[in-house]
Length: 128
Image (cartoon, rainbow, N blue to C red; front, side, top):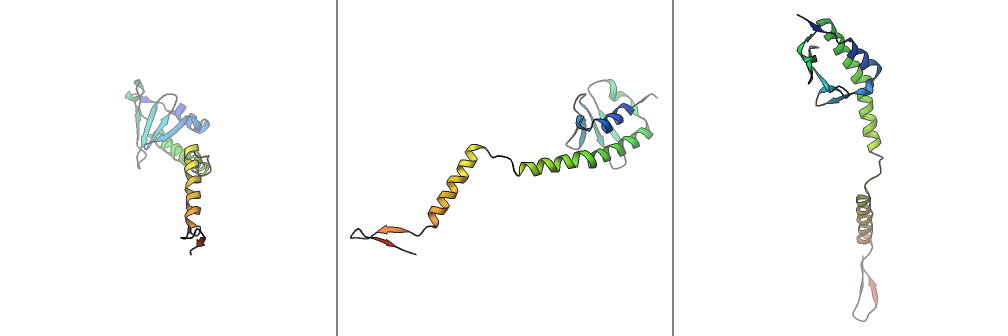
């Protein structure tokens, strides 16, 4: 049975990690649209719109690819996601949202002020 040599993909995962992304549990190579699903036993399922998916991956390369994927995920992908999440905490909010926050704050401060009302003779009295 012929096997698919995936050493170029392993090399790409190590040398150009930014060409890959993790979507719905699958490792996607963005340029080729090939996707790889890994299970806990280091089995790999290759999905591709071309003929690449017709051959099986050599068992020894499956283990090496799974190991490389786990390294990529922990060294590249997870830190990237954490840094994106952290940056989102400080990103500028949309103008309409910022305006609503300001107006809500003003309303809050206005409601916290002591109530003032005019008595019967027109004198200003304070409650609270």
